Structure formats: structure tokens, C-alpha cells
Image 1 (cartoon, rainbow, N blue to C red):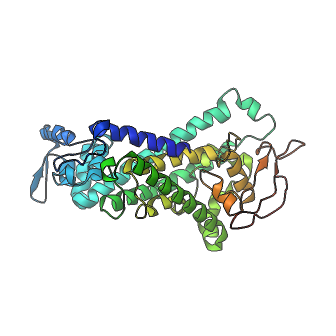
Image 2: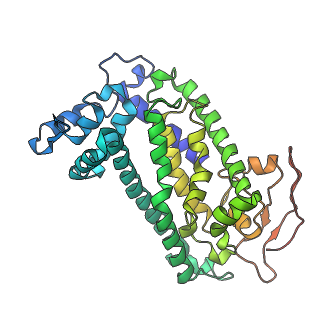
Image 3: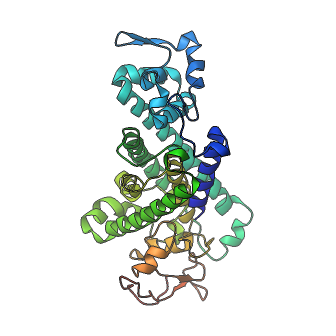
Amino acid sequence: FSILVVACLTTAVYAASLNGTAQMVVEPNDDYVPWPGDNWLRSMASDASNSFTFDGYTYNSAYEAVLNGDPASNSVKNFNAYINSFIIPHDVSIKMVKTFGTFWGHHVTCYIRNLFAGMIVYYGTAGFFHYHCYIHPRSKEIFKDRKRPSNEIIWHQIKLAQASLFIYVLLPAISEFVIEEGYTKTYYTFAEIGGFLPYLMHTLVYFSLVEIGIYWMHRTLHTNKFLYKHIHMPHHYYSRPETLTPWASISFHPLDGMLQACPYVLCLPIVPCHYLTHTIMIFLTAVWATYIHDAMDWNIDPIMGSKYHTVHHTHYIYNYGQIFTFCDRIWGTLRVPVGKTGVIEGPKKVKLLPAAKGWFGNGRGKTKAL
């Protein structure tokens, strides 16, 4: 829910800042370039050191070449080029254009940016949760009746996650490609969708389809023996609470992460979605994955929080959902833990409620301790 709210609010604030709240649903004229506009390109053109020659043409910057001097023709591409301009050194962007051409050079630059951003998100969020779980003074209270993860398991997760990142970040790069090339119903301004209310309705439908898609993709990765053995099983190497940490969030086969997150892209040709909303959802999903792998019990129903995901790792066939418990309730795969999921020994060890019958399926298993 927090992902949906933050994505919608951020997009609304952004849309209001484009032309002012009163102009949010006014159709822009042909010369209108939504934020970041085209002043940033003019600013780069004013610096003679940014110019270069490629294929017999002289450009004021790598991004003028990428945009063909017309930022108004593709607002999403203009946005991505602008973001690249202050994250990627300009010499690198020029090198990518000269090596791969203006089209693929842009997408290779976006991939490099996504890799850099993915590393920041992974190490930043996992480091933040690591401090609060294992270093903060309250960690003594947290682990008084449960085992701490070993340094060896944390290091194992970091190495696997870093190796996976190089391929995993291809998914947002693919997303940017299909959006910029017009293969989706993604839009960039509220004017294109008719205002805030249509935006909100389409966003709710999009998010719901994504949630259902991720549930079934995750469940298929378990029920299909080939996919489980060769793709998903490495992530379930962490099968006990003391082996789950924030660093396990993307410690998986890279195709595993791409498959589980692909509904964010596959739903774009079906339901209109604001580009910024889509991007923020993907970003916050990475943060969410860190939270649900910390094996703590900070959870508010019907959120599919860490207590539910810990049960998924210990029992495999339950709690496949991403953000909410709704899909697991509907298809009968929800198991609710009673007590602290990290306590697996002694009189206070956690127990599971029986799996209830879903609307379109039956739960599996009986009450048992972890």
C-alpha cells in the first residue's frame, strides 16, 4: 500500500509542477516540452567542451545526438537523457554513442545508470535495515530468544546479489526501451490521460494486475519443477529465519528477479500507467524486498510483510504475494504465523494457523510449528 501511495503522491506533485495545478489537464502545444524541458540541453550546448563529431555531424552534446535535437518528440526519452546527464560522466555518454550509435548508445547508458542506481538502492537500504536489525541497541532485545545470522551467510548473500545485479537491472532497461519506442500505453503527463481521477483509476487497475501477475509468477517458480530447480531454488538456500537478512532481498538467480518483476512491464501494454509512477513502483519494490527478508515481525495486515515472507522461506508453498495477502487468501495459499517467526525452539516457538480455503483454491497443510 505504501508503494502505491508514494508513487501516486509523487506523480501528482510532479504533474502539478509541470504547468501549475490549473493546467494539469490542458493539452500542451506543439512546442511544449514537459519537465525537465529543454533548457538543460541548451546549458550543455553553451559549453564548447561538450561538443563532438559523429557520423559526419557535429553535436553540442551526446544527449543532443540521442534526442536528435528534438526533446519534445519523446518526453520519456528526454527525461531519461536528462537523468543520465548528471549521473553518467559526459565522456562516458559520448563513448557509448560513438561505440553503439545514438539509439543503442542511449540504452547502454541507461543500463549503466540503472546498474549504478541498483547498487545504491541495494547497499543503501540493506545497510539501513542491517543497522536497525543487528547494530542498534534494541537488537539485544530482538535476538534474546532467537539466533543471529552469521557473517558468512550475510557475505554469501552480498556476493550473490552483486553478481545478479549485472543482469537483473536489464529489466528496467527493457522497460525503458519498450516505453520510449511506443509499445506500451505509458504516458508522461496527466493531460494525456484526462486528469487526476482517470490517472488514479488506471493506476489502481495497473497495480492490481501487477500484484496478481507477481503472485502467479512466483507461484509458478515453485510449482514448475524445472524453473524451481534451475532458477528459483538458489534463493531458497536461505530456508531458516537465521539465514534471512536484508541482504537476501536480491540474492537470487538474475533471471529469477527478472521473472518475478516482469509483470511491471508486461502490464504496460494493457493498462495506461504514468511513467513516473511505474518507475517509482519498481524502485520502491526493491526497498520492499529488503524489508520482507529481514525475518522480523514488523507487519500490519493485510500487508504481506516480513512475518509472512519468513513463512514462505521456511515452508515454500505458502505466501507467494508481493505487497498484499489478498492473492494468497483468494487462491488458498496463505499461512498466518502466530508468535515471532524467528523463534523456532522452546515454549514460545512460532506456530502456523491452518491454511484456509480460498475462493478459487484450497490451502495446503495443517497447523504445525516452524
